[in-house]
Length: 166
Image (cartoon, rainbow, N blue to C red; front, side):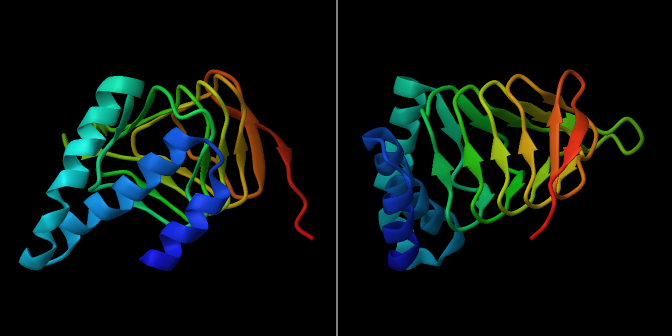
């Protein structure tokens, strides 16, 4: 855990991002480890404070891979059931939220792959996935899955370019 936090402190440049990352990772221990880790309740409280101050509403229950990057971390909301892969970069005003599946009646949440960049103002809703190595352009509304190695923009988001591997 310490190595992960060190890596993410290097990747994130802003003080707010660094402060959030440390507290997010420690607060996650509160929910994922045994009774001995309940000392991290303070970090959960700090995350609530950051939600109030800068609109960073990311539950410590959210599964986020290594290398998480927050550029301009304001007004970012991520549903607790969402899954984010490694090296995901989020910019300001991003929402990753659940939706009620009309068939099952269950709440379904997005899965974001590895090495994905979500530009400012992106909204990702429901039972969708964004494939590895993809970029979602500013203001895009993602309501259908995006394949890996894609650039997608618009409302609703559509793939406009495939990124060549290599």
